[in-house]
Structures are given as structure tokens and as C-alpha cells.
Image (cartoon, rainbow, N blue to C red; front, side):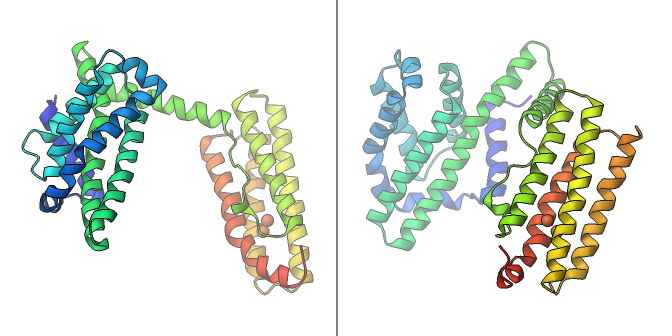
Length: 327
Ligand SMILES: [Fe+2]
Ligand SMILES: [Fe+2]
């Protein structure tokens, strides 16, 4: 089991691998500390006011003296802005996260406050330094803030692990329980959310085709909905038949248009249609005969089938058709 020092240092290493943080970021801040440390009062006032202005956190924090809060934030900010954090900065940051957890301050407030602080820091950098220097200082600050944020937010997870261990659940079992509940939540979310949501990024710019694509999206969503709720095989069989029939109808319509307007890439498009009809037709046959079941793999395939064909193959004919006066 890790202690708070190992936990926070491990997180620094992992986050740094992604956001590019290195010790040299502290050097950048150290060079300008005479300016940035003087912003401490303004920032701590802003930070505390924002925290207490929120109706959720203000209730929780009513017991804490706001001056104390302001002061502890000022100490943390000044340590950061000095560019000389010392050995305990990251574990102390983890402690701040644990204090938040103890007070019930939600992570979304912490994220909102960090974002607000970064915007103000950026504005002040632009007022105080030449553009290049302002960017250099801001990005060093931002990388450090992101690591601090990762530590604060993840300290909730750290507390969970410690708590579980105290009641006799080891880390591996905890990870397994967590994995199972995440899986369950994903399945539940999938069952209530539509498989595909129509938006303008799916439009090929031709009204008649867009209407047909929307209908295909609707059929796929009702197939997806039927698999999650009723488990009525007859209803599923009917929707699957609708899907196959409408796919054939729509492909014929598109192919007619492409032939009529001598679309140059017709052959490749026909090959793509043929393969898709065969794949969906085969699945339909297997399902009607009781050899196949609706599964998350099938829906993954159908979603990428429709998304991929519309966004890739179909969109390619758009300019040609428009030039031929189709709409
Ligand atoms: Fe299409
Ligand atoms: Fe097509």
C-alpha cells in the first residue's frame, strides 16, 4: 500500500508523461517570482470568494473561517509561484484534496476554480510580460496546476483505497469491484442513450439523402432500444427486417442517382454497398434462424457501418451531385 508521498509522486510522474511537465517549469516560475508572487492577494481573494459564493460549497464551508481559507490558499499559491516548491509540495497538495473530500467540496468546484484561476493568471501574464515570455510563464504554471489538479482529484480515489484496506478489502479486490461497477454503469448508459444521434456532421448536403439517412439512424436506434428493454424476439426480428429492407431501398436510390448523374467513383461505391448489404443480410438470417443474438459487438459494428459509410463513401459524391443540381 502506498503512502501519501509515494501516491502523489507517482501521479506527478504519470501526469508529466502526458502533459510534458518537467523540473524546468519551476525554473521558469522562479525567474519571474518577484512579479507573480505579488498577485497572491488578488488570487486568494478571488479563489475564496468563488468558493463561498457557490450555494453548495458555502453551506459546507460555513464553519470554516474564510480568512483562514484565504490564507491557506495564499501559502499554497506563493509556494508554487516561488518556483521553489520543496520536498513536501506534492504531498501537501494531496492533503488539500483530502481536506476537500473531508469537507464534501466536490471535484467539479475544484476544477472550476482552477480554471478560473488559470484564466486570471494568463490575463496577468499578458499584462506583465512580452508575449513570448507571457506564454512561457503561463504554460509552466498551467502544467504544474494540471498536475496539482490531478493529485487533488485523485486523492478521493486514494482515500477509497485506504478506506477499503482498513475494512479488509485489498487493492486487487477493490479494483475488481470498481471494474464490475464501471462495466454495469456503461451497460446501463448504453441502454438508455441512443446508439447514434443525428447531427449536421452526418449531413451529405442533399436533403433527399439526409432524410433517408435519418430514417436509417432511427431504425438502428429502435433496434438498439428494443435490445435493451423488451427482449421481445418478434419485435427485434421485425426491426431487423426493416433495417435490411430500408438499407436495400436506400442503396438502390443512391445508386440510381449516381448512375443518372454519371458519378465517376460509382464502381467503388457499388462494391461498398454490396458488402454492407451482405453483412447485414447475413446477420438478419442468422438472427431469424436463432443462430445469432444482439450483442454490443453487433451494435459497435452497425454504428461504425453507418457512421463510416455516410461520413466516408457517401460524402464523397456530395460535391458531384450538387454540381449536377441534385438537392
Ligand atoms: Fe447512404
Ligand atoms: Fe452509400
